[in-house]
Each structure stands twice: as C-alpha cells, then as structure tokens.
Length: 193
View 1 (cartoon, rainbow, N blue to C red):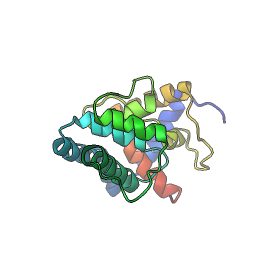
View 2: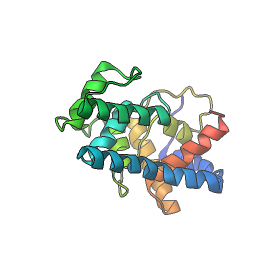
View 3: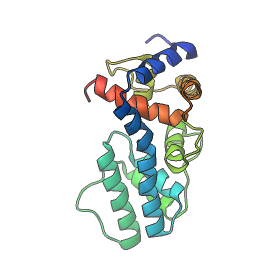
View 4: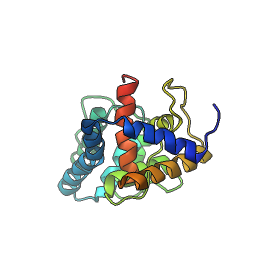
C-alpha cells in the first residue's frame, strides 16, 4: 500500500462526506451521543463515572457489532456489581475482561499511549473531545480502500489520518470524531457491510 499525504487523505475523507445522505449524516452525528447515553445510564445506576463506562465500551469493542458491545458492557457491570454472570460467553480475551473489571472498580484507566482505545473512550465520554478514533475503517476511508485489505494502523498512519480528519472537521464545522462516524456509516453502505 502506497502511503498518502495528509492532503490526499483529506480529499478522500471529503469524498465520503460529499457522498453522505442527510440520513447518514444524522446517523453519524447521533452515534457517539447515543453511546454517551448508555454511559450516563450505567454511570448513574452503578455510581461510576461516564468515563469508566466509556472505557469499558472501548476495551470490549474490537471485532464486534455495536449491539453485542452494548450487551456485553451491561452484562459485565451486572456481573461486577451484582455477581450475576451472563448466560453467554464474552467475545473478548480474558485480559480484556480483567482490564474492564479493573476499570469498573476504579483500579485502572486506559493509558493515552493506547491511542485508538483511549481516543474511542474519550470520544464516547466527552462531547467536546478533540480526539478522533482511527481504526481500520477510518483508515480505509482516508485511503479510499474498499478492498478491506487495510487492517493494521501504524503510528505514522494514525497520526497523519488523525490530522486529516481534524482538517475535514474544521472545514465542515463539526468534531473530528463526528466526521469519523459519518464517514464510517457511508463506508459501510458503499462496501455493503
């Protein structure tokens, strides 16, 4: 894969923004706010911070659909606080589950050096977040790669894509994480996933 300049990535991200229907823009703009709503509910129920819930969502999120992610987060809080194990197996490593339990009881926070996981939690918890989650889908948008061959995000790619998303966000008067969410919705439609 040939590396792209930040300007080239800006152009590709803007292409996805231009292809977004009004419904897709709305869906993208609402995604993080709806996730934040779940955080508020669980934070109030279990007397934890919104950030703690967002971090659990982030740690549990890789390789799963949002509905499954929510189900697992709710089940994990129920398990930690009420001792009720779910009737299903978590789709996560033992290490991720233990890390989430430590987050829930206040003994761990995602370090900033874990850029993607840290950014995702921050995007969910803070509507004023300046972070942007650069996962493989965000990178595929920035590179306009519909083949799904882009799977790993290097540190340099992350840094440059983050900058590109921030530039596009400034051009459109929205947050960078909102651009990421809108373009993710468009990407899913285009590649039929």
